[in-house]
Length: 526
Ligand code: NAP
Figure 1: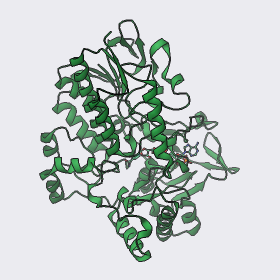
Figure 2 (figure 1 turned 30 degrees about the vertical axis):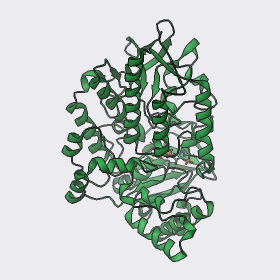
Figure 3 (figure 1 turned 45 degrees about the vertical axis):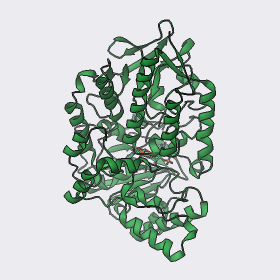
Figure 4 (figure 1 turned 135 degrees about the horizontal axis):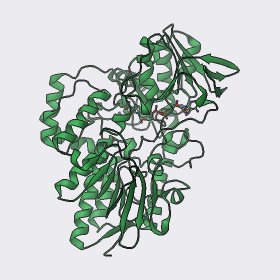
């Protein structure tokens, strides 16, 4: 098996194959393992899922031995954890770093994948597994003059590992998504001046991060596997501490609702949106909780015009909500300025800054916090060809077509871990990754027993699945805004809701498919 990528997904795939005594090799473009946690080393980067949940569950010894220091782990600690896993399970000998996969072509005669890497090597394997990540392909904005800027330019998702010094510098940052919202408060502390260029305001919930108490950690460790099992019953496969949602919003009185929002705001994190179960189903329910957040923003930000600009107007939750430490209050600092791009987009980047609304803003350092070509970008950056030389790009020209987010017709023996059509980004990614890798691994055992050499999603199963994923999304408020879930952040990308909503029903379906001899997949012996 060839595995592309050595983040959480690729490493676990390697481990699983090794355990089964199979031959596996992973290629990783980075000079280290860790995937998203290797590349996104911008200041303030941390996970928005609590540390005790955002970790592998496959090894009881590992989960007992590892200690997290904070409620939400910072990026360096997660990267240390991934490196520890790579060492502990001796995964490095099957991971080839500094190696980018350029081509992956299915050779019909013999039914093998031929993979070419940027060091000029060619590899052959029966199976090819894309562990390329959902948020790994950088979205570089197409702004005129970007190359003409004479100062330093950094994208948050390709941050220099030696760090960037901001002392005495004028800094401009484009974007106000999760990455920017984490970086802005930290950069503002040392930069001489920070200018934030915002196209769309985003909802952000306070993290209330802090040291992880020993008692909390040991209480979880006592019952770790049971807690993880309970999490797998939750829609997003995490949030054990959130308690149950309080039913439908308007089944509670106005006072009860207010109290519930306040309590969840104090609790912090993504659990805020789990306060009632219809926040992403009922527009009125969503309006009320959105108003609550806007009120909070007005209470934090001193200048009323700035507070108004920072107040989002889309459905809360239809874009991934951000989790922050001191974001809104950063705009009370004298050295921070917010510039609204919603009415006047960036006209051009110049040698010394950028122009919007006919005015030039000057800075020494430009930060692009413009996000990712999510879910499909990393796959399309590789020349993947299936039967009859069809490219994946052609096949998915109107949006990704997969069965269970795991396979696509015309591309036998190619698996996508947390691919489009699976719950992936709407869940705890580590849990989704483990579920996919385990499923793929079981499928191999089955194929071996049955004497099958190839597996391929059928067209009808794939069509039905894509329809099903969209039907679920259409019953919610998710499709109402220009999110990266829909591909709407990348000009020209087909607008299709990509993740499957709901972890438990998805897992149930995967298990049913496996139990019914992999119904919806076709096998062949040659
Ligand atoms: P993002 O959410 O896509 O945000 C990109 C930002 O750049 C948006 O504000 C966007 O504005 C702006 N932008 C893009 N192109 C622009 C242009 N040409 N002109 C002006 N503004 C432009 O990207 P992200 O912040 O990197 O986060 C992506 C996802 O990664 C998150 O949603 C989350 O799932 C994950 N992430 C998680 C964490 C965490 O665990 N805490 C941290 C970072 C990232 P518009 O909104 O108008 O498009």
